[in-house]
Image (cartoon, rainbow, N blue to C red; front, top):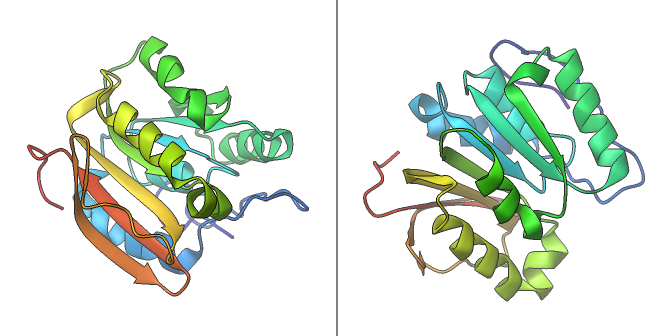
Length: 194
C-alpha cells in the first residue's frame, strides 16, 4: 500500500498486522481523490477511524493544509505516526488517540478553523450491526461548530449497507460502488457540488 499522488507519492505505508485495520484499496482511493479533485487543496480534513492514516495522508499529500486523525487502536496509532513521520507531514497533522464515537468534543476543543472534509471509514461490522450509532455520530458531527457550513462527508462502507439520502443537515449527493466497498458522499444543502 502506498501514497498515490502528491508530495508523498510512492511512500509505502506501514499497516499493522493482526489487527482489524482494513486500509482503503488503491483503486478506491484513486477514484475517491479523482472525484474530490479540486476540493482537497487547502482543505482542513478529519480522518475518523483512521487506521494507518491512508485517507488523511493521501489528502495531505495532495495539498490539504491540515488533517486531524482519530484512532484508538495502539498498533494502528503507531503505524499512523510512523507513516506521518516518513511522509514529512507531522507538522500538518494532529493525531488524537481516541474512540471516534467520542470525537466531537475533541474536534470542537481544537483551535483551528472548521473542517471542510470528513472521512469516515468505520470497521465494516460496526455499520452492519450498529448502524444507528454511526448515523447518530454523523448527524451530531454535521451539526457541530467544528465543521464548516460547506463541509463534505465521505463514508466508506460495506456495499450491503445503504446510508439514508437525508441525515440531519446532510444530503447524499453521490454513491460509488467498488465490489464489496461503497463510497457515499454527503453534503450540507448549501455545499457546492463535486
